[in-house]
Length: 199
Image (cartoon, rainbow, N blue to C red; front, top):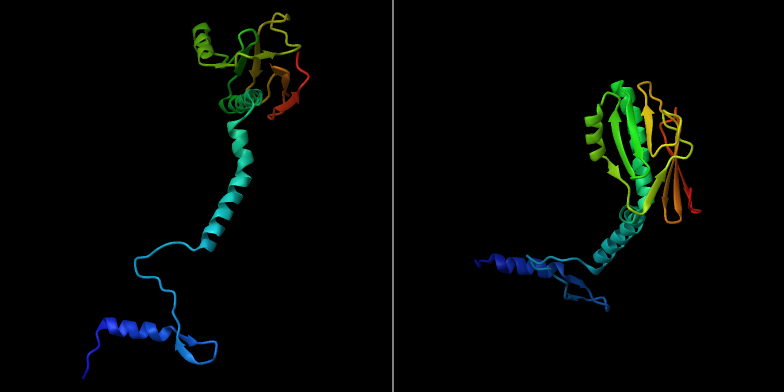
């Protein structure tokens, strides 16, 4: 009895699977495309599909990426102040403590403190505060200090009951003006953009 090695059996089985009908209707051997064990790769169609999906993802994520990287400094500062105001209103209500937002219009500085801080603690809070860009100015039109006169240092209070002082903050940079409207009983700060420039 003749023995068949596994190589010959594999060859016969594989060869029989490649039997197809020729155009003239007779059966015969037709070369088939084979992929040897250990070979790996992608077809052209698979690469096209993947590249199309990546292109679509990049196309739809580009606007958010662009706004994140190339954000206008004025808008960035306006959003930061708006977020700070909303946070202080929530913190004052949660902690049942009065918080204060100080704005030095002449130095372009903003810092947060609470009503219980002494002069030394206030000085430390100012050091850890936020400074505006050099080419940006801030103003609070119509603001009067406790002495009822115009001051270069404004203070907005945030009360334990969840409301705050109302104020209008202007951020001016070149010909662009960002106007922040702080309403006493609303948590949301409205940001308006004006290109006329000036106060």
